[in-house]
Image (tube, rainbow, N blue to C red; front, side):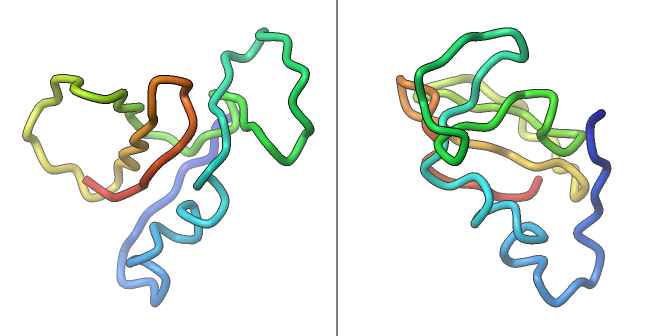
Length: 86
């Protein structure tokens, strides 16, 4: 089940409520995708907080700001390179 989150006035909001540390460097996999990666090297899409958007390099994104949304930037291998709110 997807987790709901809110940045609010949490003292950790600059760290996206801890998601930056949880995701940075991990590979995002589809829910049914098989992998040879160790469990601490990946996260499944179903385990990401909602709402979110995954942004590959050079992707087009809307400019609407949603303070409750987690933006997850990935490289061409779906490895998380940065995380921010909006």
